[in-house]
Length: 120
Image (cartoon, rainbow, N blue to C red; front, top):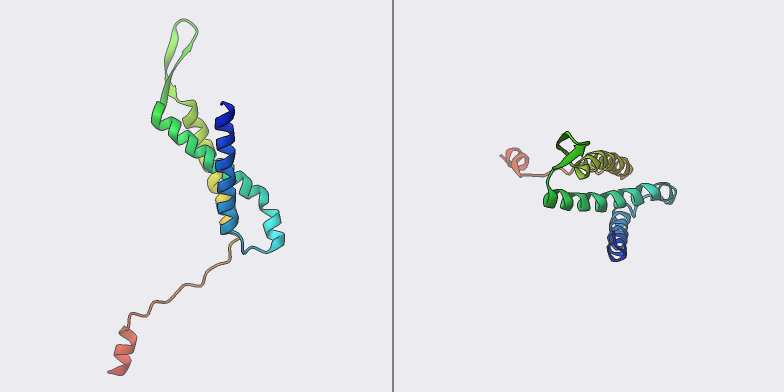
């Protein structure tokens, strides 16, 4: 990866860290400090997964291989293998983070039916 792409990827990761920090801004300060590394890892994985998706879309899900003179064929691409592993880890990190968010009370929606029945 050339230097320009590395810098651009770092910028994208920083933007994702900022976005995630905004989502978790209301966490208690101690919890927030404890999950900083989870947020950084989640941001890194999100951006890397985007890049892997682009690579898979361009190059496909399989690649040819050759082991020696007579053994060759088609296998799952390296990008697909990394993507599959990383997406599972990303889901686990995001679940750990979202489990820390305060639970919202379910909002009851008044459709007016109960009031109609009582007024009758």
